[in-house]
Image (tube, rainbow, N blue to C red; front, side):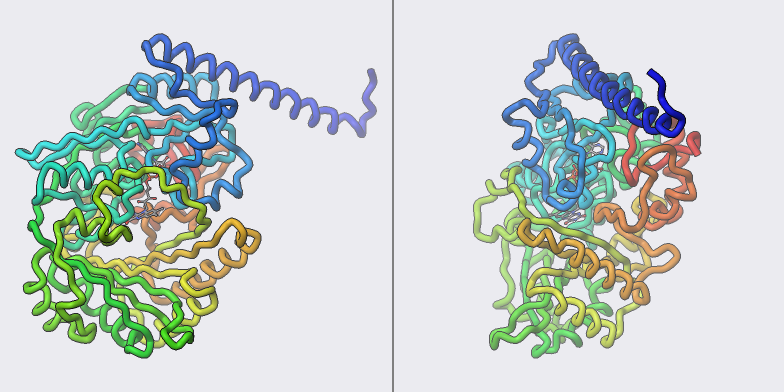
Length: 532
Ligand code: FDA
């Protein structure tokens, strides 16, 4: 057959598509065969391998997805999900992934805001840690080993079963996974008194890019530093963390007080900024802001002061009267309870049994976009009023700003102690979020434009050079790696300094040492120097 000159490039292109399609199918089959073989070699059952043909594939994939937005935009689905029960199965997955060039994604709780644990632009498979979730508590040494497939709810429940005065400082949502959460920081209702989850990691078990298993001693202090806040994915698969537990009083006090614009919400929120990071460390006054309907049916702003005090109400009230009388807190607003019940209160399960913390599979149909900022100078009242206008542009209760206060012990820890750099000088962190349903997804671009406009407006009030962001509230808008080919230091710096400040440089050097071929990677993983 003769091909004319003008058709030759088209022929070449079609041939490339056919060959690469066939070779990718070929690789996938070989990869599967490899997995089966490796599992058999280590006497592992192969029923923890789910291909798309398996009846449970979709339910396993969906079960921990909290945000449907990334999956709805992604063309690729994982062609295999494995749910290892032994470390040897993770080692097998790494071996076969390398051999056949199929990208590995690791998922613990599946709460990544951009879905990076379960979507990819290139053919991939998931190592889902759900079966590696044992928790063992040592009440004499006040420590716990927790496998990364456990959820925060399971951790809190297990600690409370063993002790009334031990707890752990981490996030509010019980279905968040230990694997992603501890790796990126872990802020919660006790963070002003006790810091973030990553501050309390004292050992870890990690499988590196060569499939080798390490503890703190064998991985060395550089790598151990990196995995305490340097973000999931980049450095290996963490199988478990050992953490120091914290000692708490048997009784804590919670309250959730709402003020609307008619009740001086603007002035009170303004005042909150001068108080929230300086008040008694035992008190964390978190603030949620939404556009709501007032009792007369008119739109207003609801400022929800949702707070935890580590102690009895009689100790809390004088503190509030002295430092924040503007809120007008009274005893009737407050409830005393054991710490474990407070975790239910903040997760929206007030009055339910703690057993609800063990429920891992709350399937979510929500589509959402989140972003974050750090505030170092109070936002003036006219700035707050402009934020109210933005909130009123969206439907009632659709958009939310969370103001999470810093200060307390967070101020006392050096910025370079662990990779999480957001320490002294920050009054509070803003979390912006906006959610919609499947039916409303056709309008998703309008919602996303709204949150981007608000973010752009907020630039004048938040941290600058870099404009900091919280890694665990992952946001691909602030920059990402190249999908194909190697990402340079300059490209990764665009997002890297925002999350990690100057710690980004050290993270890059550690990555270069432990994973120079960039085996563990995603759209916001640390790139190694060797590939620039
Ligand atoms: P997921 O499994 O999606 O993993 C997140 C990232 O870590 C991915 O890149 C993944 O590949 C990687 N990873 C996961 N397991 C790993 C492992 N074993 N080894 C190496 N890498 C691993 N944050 C906060 O600080 N305070 C809070 O109160 C909340 N609340 C909250 C509520 C809700 C509803 C959501 C959706 C999220 C939060 N978060 C939060 C944010 C949360 O901390 C963040 O999304 C975590 O990364 C989630 O960890 P998962 O293991 O659940 O996610």
